[in-house]
Length: 294
Image 1 (cartoon, rainbow, N blue to C red):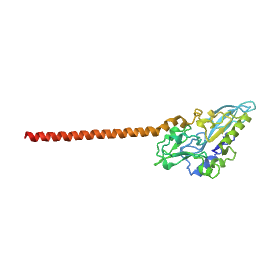
Image 2 (spheres, rainbow, N blue to C red):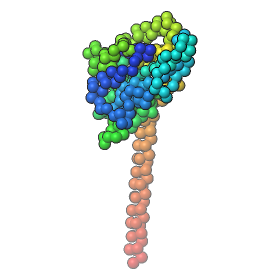
Image 3 (cartoon, helix red, strand yellow):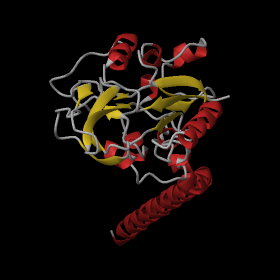
């Protein structure tokens, strides 16, 4: 069965342990001067495969969310009963590892490949630097190494080597508050549904269940995902499903086009040959006429 990770955003305290584990396991450098890994301005980057973004959210006394923003870093939790209280919500971001990845379908060099276990792996030696994957990804995950002489694409590969050995991804293994749970995706999805059905504090939406055809990473939250920076305009259908008809026709089109070009080549060469023969014949006739005149 395909593996996945269930992320419960209500449990995250923003400690950043997952970002450190990701850096250490993958040997990535710290580039805080370009992109933070933890905070209001945290963003995924070529060396940041996992980040923790901070949001201040406002909840009423009954626990219902009343709004969210990312601008004020002050926690105001000392409101009197009956009034709104403001708290942090921390959002872990990484590659979503789609069930049917757009990056894989768009990569003609086979640099991206989906495994049966769930991870979408990237093979830099196959990459030609076309960056089609960056355009195809509905979550805008793949990043390009703009500052390197020989750049490639980078992204989280869900610690595929660890998963192959029956281990959890590095980020999951170090979380002190059990924000993330690794396991079979279908079982995690059932657990998420049971959780939001039993506890009214949760939003009735499991992010990643249907987005882009479903992803290996799924989220539950007590705050609307639209207020936590999640892309909510992602289509339910997978990206490859929109292009599969055309992609299946590509080999046929390529073959026909190759035949057309071959035909044009031989037709052109034939015309040149005929024209050359006519020129030679005309020259011979002119020489004969000139000799006769003399």
